[in-house]
Image 1 (cartoon, rainbow, N blue to C red):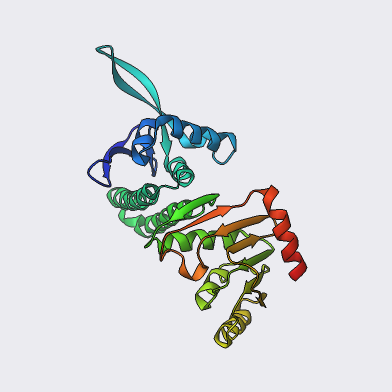
Image 2: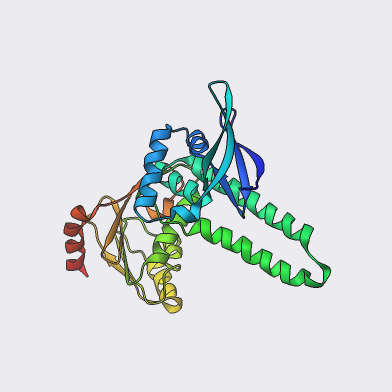
Amino acid sequence: MKNEIIIYQSDETTKVEVKVEDETVWLTLNQIALLFNRDKSVISRHLKNIYNSGELLFEATVAKNATLQLEGGRKIKREIDYYNLDVIISVGYRINSKQGTQFRIWATKVLKKHLLRGYTVNKRIDRVEDKVDILSDKVDEINLQLNTNLPPNQGIFFDGQIFDAYNLMANLVRKTNKQIVLIDNYVDDSVLTFFAKKNKNVTCDIFTKNISKPLKQDAEKFNRQYGKLTLHPFNKAHDRFLILDNTEVYHIGASLKDLGKKWFAFTKLDKTSIESLLNKIRGLL
């Protein structure tokens, strides 16, 4: 695997040599463990789960590279597995590591620069316009790849991670096919921006304690453009819940309008614990 080496360093202690090849970045098992500051056995377990669950295909995300290693005073050539950016991001989600978000942002910038440089060096004058179009598509493809990974089942966001928290919730809304139910006592117009990401035929039901006149007006404006949103007065819940297609329930530790402003956690409830909640909601609709 032909490659270029770039140093990624997030602080004084974390320094990783990253291979860049085939429009993605590559790390070994040891390097992923170093990046996320976890034991190799932990990373190995996550990798096994990623491939066993079918989330990613081993053949499409792993490349082998011959590497010289010192063993017993001798240099031995061995084939080492390198994992691409898809795998690194999936591991980061499972670990819920802030380092994963930082590395994703850094890798995106590196790949964009390489695409720009590669096409600039190799372009021919009579095909400049075509190559610019191709470059734009490639950059969009990278961004889409990073932004459409399967949402994690649980995690923690810290103050200042407003974009990452917003991006997660927006992706949950986008993937819904029929119905979204939000239980949140503190809803304002900023929450409606999440539901503007929904598919056309998806219905939205918001259960909240205080339905103010401005909120009603915002909902009316929303319905004129997007439709199928209903506000329900509700004061029986302390926590926040997001229910998707009556099959998935996320327990969210902050109101959607406050995501990323302070520390909060979210968890996807397992199927055995959500049926009673769904029955309660069905009785209210």
